[in-house]
Length: 327
Image: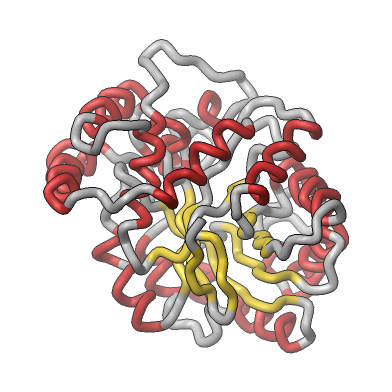
């Protein structure tokens, strides 16, 4: 495993996304399987874990918190706030100082920590980012020692650039993958200039870039790849990176032929890591085998430049015109 700088900390360039832990949005996952996934990740050299207070209504955080008690290895957990609608501090009350403080304290309790390594805004409305009050709330929480670093998970390049103007921003979490390449031009240079870490989410386009799906693949009704396939529940860009499923299956096949021989999922992750501006990429995993496959991408050689160009050309000509949702 290779590591990259996040401020004064070295974090694994392959992290672990944990929406699937304790949530049915990716299909059911037993607690023992969740622990096995976390243990495999740590054993493979991973040390950066991303979660959110809304994943499984706190179950993901609680699972990670329970796991942290079983290991002595240093782990850096990032969580997110701002999307809870459970009646405690629902939308739009989530963005007040009082609600953000309550969310932070709740996450601290779930994780069993006295300070959050990284707290992030969780794809909140653009108008709230423009107001700027949420950033001042973070600065106050940071000054009190409840949060070491703060960042923002965004849906669009516009939001990313808006956040990059905020003093003290430690990280941006963005969608970046073979189906969503535009942020490399829109955001990367500015993030590097500002010294802001880039955390890449949805790196495998909700599994399309594993190359394992066919047009007839189906998902449980509780899986967001079923109920949000066409953006019926939230931004279509968050599921399959905004690509219609059947089209995505075909695009994945075409891109498989452009990368070196081997698993498409690993080369899709390697492609992301070839960008030095990226700090870490956070694929999810529903099994230990998937974790091992994801971690192996760190050891792969860089993709040849000619292949990078072929992938870019194919994206511009065939993929980009069909992306749905806000991005």
